[in-house]
Amino acid sequence: MTNTAPRLITLRDATVEDCLRIWEWRNEPLTRESSFNTSCIPYQDHERWFLLKLRDQGTEILIATNADSRAVGYVRFSIINDQAEISVSVDRCERGKGYGSAVIRVGSDRVLRNNTVKRIVAYVKNDNPLSLATFKRAGFILSGNSEVSGVPACTLVYPSP
Image 1 (cartoon, one colour):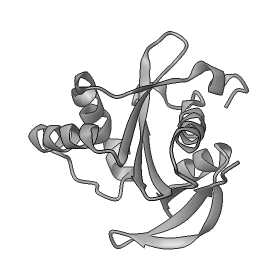
Image 2 (tube, rainbow, N blue to C red):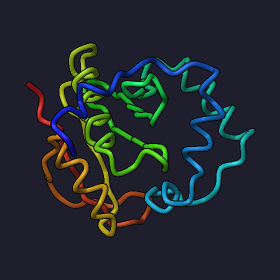
Image 3 (cartoon, rainbow, N blue to C red):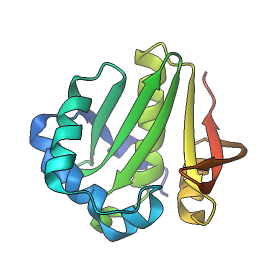
């Protein structure tokens, strides 16, 4: 990752117009392989879920744009009390440019600053070293092992300021 990547990322709240793009990102083969739910999500199911999440006070979905104002990915936070669980995806054409760790860091800082959240947790499949390295570059610290949907996972925590 370059040192300038975080400055190149801007986050905005997701809107209804982002539904199709997020569905496409979610169903991209490498994204599915990295997810705990590897199945392809039908668009109608995604649309129903997405519209509910946009209205959900406990969910924050943010679209990441680069210096050219092009959408390069998204980050989602599921907030319960003072803890948020993070989920992220970068467009397959934009991977390898440092956007992943920048999106994670910028989004996590925003959630900690704008909410009552005190802790952000990430779960990464044990057999996904690229995602693990991306979260570590973003400042997440390995805090243990867990299991998500029957799949062994690493638990990482973003330190609050």
